[in-house]
Length: 139
Image 1 (cartoon, rainbow, N blue to C red):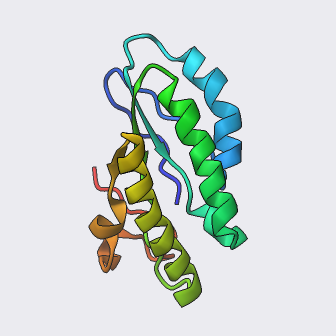
Image 2: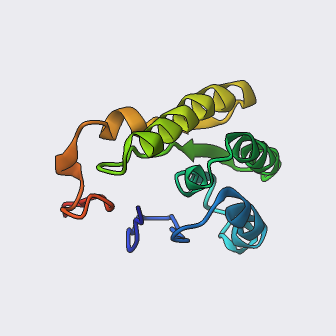
């Protein structure tokens, strides 16, 4: 799911469709350096694409590296949890639910904020476009 062209006052949004945790971790140092000092919070939404690799222990290791970096960046940090998929099969759903559960616990133990998207979007097909892969935004 890709959220693009969203504008907020004193905020910057960057979108990397299909990015996995290692890709985001590679891009974050230069990205954070480019932000104005007035931006004090960072929200990272990543992980759903990592579940397609079907290597949960590797994904956890990647997230732990991301946590270490984010804790040293000097900003207030939040991890935006995975959004449940519609119509992608029980295997994908199970992996995303497992990642959600682990991230919730890992963020708490690392003192990193966690945004619980799973429970917000679960069983709400009206929040998605007809192709079931993108969120529907109302203006």
